[in-house]
Image (cartoon, rainbow, N blue to C red; front, side):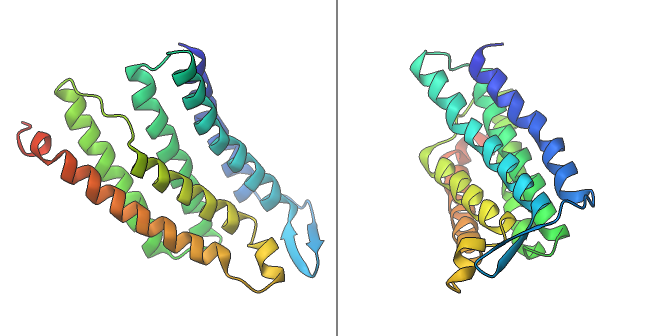
Length: 192
């Protein structure tokens, strides 16, 4: 397994750590910043999520720079993204920070695209994420990060940035899913 794939796998291994920090009721106190408060566990969880999300850029950078792009990497990288984002979104629903219907749409799109990827892979075709899919992933990461951090910076100036970011992520999730199926509809229709 090459370095970019190891970095991708590390993203997957950070998910249970993130879940434990966010869901186990640790009493680490709260931080106050200009009148806004943030539980320390949520700050640590957000930092783990952001670190795990950053590995998406790092593994892609090394894979392209050193010509280490593999079919395994093309499969694992979007899978790791989907697992991380899905876990974080479910945590946000559990904590009451995100509407469940938005999370259901986002996760449903991820399952649908993963299913199409598996059908295509069965036909010998591995499809890497396109630019719209990458924008979708990064808008999701920004929204989740802002929600995990309780919109703390923007809360000070009364701007609901986290909520706006979640709507932007929903928009790109739907658009990229539509685009993905439109571009691969022939392979999907002709699969057995």
